Length: 224
Ligand code: CA
Image 1 (cartoon, rainbow, N blue to C red):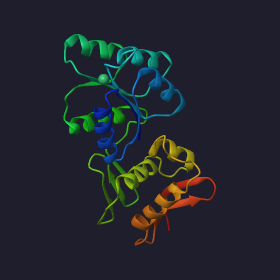
Image 2: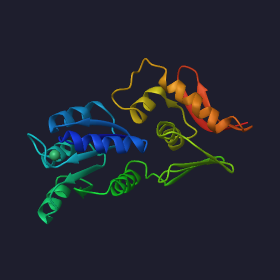
Image 3: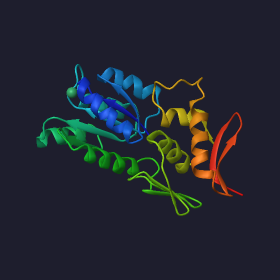
Image 4: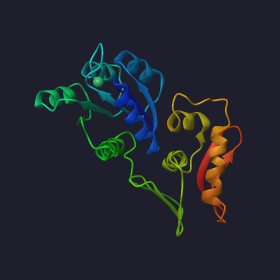
């Protein structure tokens, strides 16, 4: 899942971005509304976290503009003030939810999960591919009876493949949704992660789940 975080206070932006990355989200950060509109136009984000108080045009205006441009992705507004007027302005501008600063990081994560579940594909909290099970809230991964330990990035990659199980997932799609703008499309990073995942989920099993279609991408599905 790839998120655009729009927050002008560098320290706040750093803390939120780091926390999200630790929880397997890919995050791009920008500090003002115009940059946010540009980023949202050129990248296919799964969700936007938008601070209300920004230099230049505020978060409400940016939110309205995104909707006017036909962006349907979930938008979570962050607000420093908790007045009823602010909350109404946020929702009226087209935001799906809002969170008042300061907030508990766990609550931000829970709201993101809820918004992502409601969006595009009505995402289930548990994903199953044959005997592989992923819990999208706890990031617990089990195959058969054994628990599989994954890094945040390995988990993010596996979750993306599991959400699109039994269909070809291209390298471009993986780069777009699992990595952020710092990803180098000419590197072999994706292959490296795929190989690590394959070791962890398939090595001990006769039925293999992770398959490469050379030059095209990857498919997660059971094959003997
Ligand atoms: Ca701000």
